[in-house]
Image: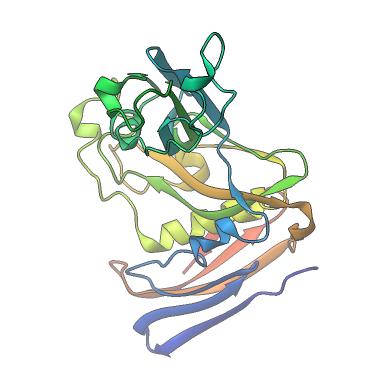
Length: 287
C-alpha cells in the first residue's frame, strides 16, 4: 500500500511550535523543542517484532567473555544474564546435578556498565563479578548485544533474519554522550554532549525510514555529507534504534514527498519546506 502524507501546523504564526505529522506510517505530534519518539517502543513486543540482537555471546563460568564489534561500531547491550536458563549450554563434562536448575535468572547489569559504548570488551563470567544466584549450579554468562552506534566515518550495517525486515524506530547523528566513540579522540572533540536538535533528529529518522524500512539489510555511512554537520569540531556518531518484523508489514514509499516545518528554535524564525526524493534519498531544505 502506498502511504499518503499529511502535515498540519498547529497554532498560528509559529505559536506554539507544534507539528502534527502522519508521514510514511510514522504518526507524530511534537514540539520542535522536544521530539517525541515515533510511536511507542512497545512495538518491539507486538506482531512478532523483535529487537535485532545480531550478536549472542555465551561464556561458561570461569571463562572470559569477549564482546566485539566491527571497526567503527560500538557495543550496545540488549540483555545479559549470569546463571542458567538452559540445560544444554555449557553442560559438557558437568554432572546432572549442576545442570538441573534451568530457572537461575540473574540480570547482569554490570555488562552494560562495563561494555556499552566500547568497540570491544572483556568481562569474566564468575561469581566474584556477578555474585552467585544459585549455589551448586554451573552457570554461564549470556549476552545479547547490537552494533547500534556507528562512529563518524564508518558504515552502519542493519540486518534482520530471513523472513523479517527492518523497521526504524528512530535515528540520530551527533553526540549525546562523551563515552561513545571516544577512543583515541581528543577531549575537545568529545566535550559537546548536546550535539543534536529535534528538527535534525526528525529529518534523520525519516531519511533512515525512507532508505531502510522494509529491507532485510541496509548500509548507510555515518558522515557529514550524508546527514549534515550539527556541531563543527565535535566527533559524532550515528545511533539507530530499529526492530525486525515480518515481511507482511513491508511498506512501499512514494518517490517524492514534501512537507513544511515551522522552525521556532532556529536563530531566524522561518517555515522550512523539506523535500525527500527517492530512490537516492536525497534531502533538500528550502526556507
